[in-house]
Length: 462
Image: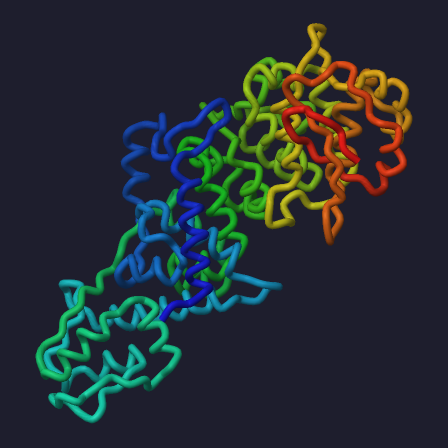
C-alpha cells in the first residue's frame, strides 16, 4: 500500500540528500566528515551511535528518507522531515503519527527477536503473539491450504504493510505449518555529537522515556537545531557545542538552519567575511568579538530577529574580491542599516524559504568603479531622485544610496497574495547611462513596490 504523504517525503528526502553531501564553511568547502581535530576526538565522535529498532530500510520507508542515503545522514534527514512535515498549527500530522506508531510496533517486534536478532516462529501454533503485533489473524486455521491472513487491527496492519514486513512469506509458512524466520535487528546510525548531549535538551516523557529518535519526533525545536548542526563542518560543530552550547542555541535553531551553514570556527575564532581586517567592523556590528566564537555566534543569531545572520550569510557566500569591497568601513555598517530598516521587527526565519535571497544576488553581481564606489546604471537618475529613494537622511553617495538603500528598502516587501514584481536587472555589461523611464515613476510607488534583482542587466520594466 502506497501513501501519497510517504511518496512526497521520499522525494523531499532524496533532494535533501543531494544538498547534504558536503559541509560548507566560510572561505570554501570542507568534507563533512573531515576535521582538523585530534585523532582521539575523531575516534570518539565516530563511536557515537543511536539504536533504531528493526531493519533500517523499514524505518527509512516510514520516515520518508531515501534508501540511497548513507547511515550518517538518516538522523539529520529525520530531523528535517519532522520540522517540515511533522506539525501543522502545533498539531502532529499524519506523517508524524505514523512514524511514532511504527516505532512502538517495531519495539514490540524486537521483544520477539532472539539473541541472533531474528524473529523465529516454530510453527503455526506459536504465531499468535506475532500476528497480534502485526494486526492480522489466520483463518480458517493452521496447516490448511486455504488458510489466509486477514486484518484484525487496521492501524497495525497498515503499518505492517507500509514498513515492508514479508507478509506473503509468513502466510505461506503458516499454511505449510513450517518454521518462519525474519531478521529484525537493532539498527545503528551515527549521531552528531553524542546522544546524551541532545537528551539534556528534552523535557517531559521524551527526556527520560526514550532515545534520541523519540526526542527528535516530539520536540520540534530540537529537531530544527539538529538539522541546522548537520550543515556545519565537524570542527565548527564541536566549537559551538563547547560554547555557547546546545541549550543557548536552542531558541535560535530556525535562524541557524537558514543562515548558519556559512559560520566557520577555526581555533576558537569565527572566520568573518572580509578576513582579519574586517574583524573590528564585525565586532562593532555584532556586539561581540569573532575571537570569542560562542558569544559572537549567539549575538549574530539573536540580533534584529536574525536579520544580521542573513546579512552575514550573504556576505560569506560571495568571492573574496566582493567581500573586500562590501566589508570596507564604514560601508559594512551602512549597508546593514539599509538592509534591516524596512522590516527589522519581522522574524527572518518564519517562512518556509529563506528570506532576503535578492541580497545574495546583489552582492554577487554588483560591479565597482575604479574609485571603489559601486557601479550603478543610471547615475543621473540617482542624483535627480535622491529624495524619492531616501525617506530619511541617507549615508554615502547618491550612487551607493540607489544601489543599496533604495533597492533593499523596498526589495523585502512582500504581498501575502503575490509579490508585486518590478525588476531592477543588475549585472555584467550594464550601460553607464541607463535612465529609468519617467512613465514608471507613478507605478513604482515605494508603498507598493517590491524590487527583484536579476542578472545580467538588460532593461528596467514597469
